[in-house]
Picture: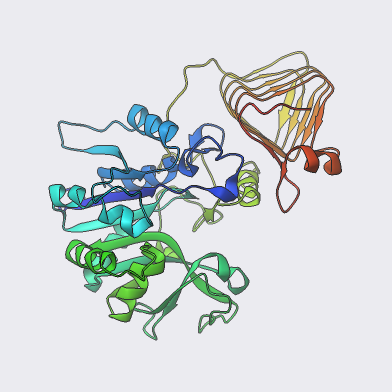
Length: 405
């Protein structure tokens, strides 16, 4: 923040993303395409940059080539002003071992903090879909005098086992307990059927973070994770506050998309988040120009619809050629849907080709897949489950270049 405290942004982007297979078979989870033209990492980076946090280190580890390339070619900041966004791979600075967890990833990268010497460190995850102004969270952190602040969002209590859960104190600000993926957490005082889930976004006073990481590194029983180790430790010491995400407002938001946040860690969540984009009044609006989402822009001509080709309730990226019928779908650049082909409720990544007369329903097709003329995906579910990857809710997913039988 210009004229304010010095802030370093650290984005945790080393996740393996096993639950998003086969989309993560050849790339890191934050590099997975989203919304036709974006990658998941673009959402957190756009939020930080829009919030004037301009010095950002992205910690990477698994299958990071496409992620590193995307960041270095897309996210170029002004060297004149000392701003940067840089991928930082696992470097084994503390011995011949990779990152043991998210806390260990930062501990092994402490040179980044020592070099920058910030007043505060913002640590955000790299694989969530949302808009957020981080300045508002930093402001509460500073005013509250906390050692650490964690962003929380209300979710149904029945979903608590998938998240870190925050139990606020009676004043609604301090964190009384931090439970990592509990089976039966207590509900909130004003709504017993809801809990506060951690969004994986934290603000730390630098001294507090350095001290906590050092103590955690010396603890052989620790799992060395931010949510599983650092936050519980600081909570027991009374140093943690919660930031209610519902209080966060960004320019251009609507009542409908205010407070939208999705963890797209599973194929079903990934699919559902795409369906949120395509309604007339979307639950999450990509077209908010007052808080833009940035990404790499491909040099392709506009999408073309010819020979009776149509697309309804869909998003179609540049370079697409549609001569068939597309409904309730999201198409990335270079997709071709040939004459007589039908695409319904599907997500097609770059350069997918749907042959003449083929049918694709409720499917996710990764890059460079060719569906032969007359073939089907997502029509015969018993057959498709034997041949391809199927989600819990029956979404059929094919990995990069996978052969369609």
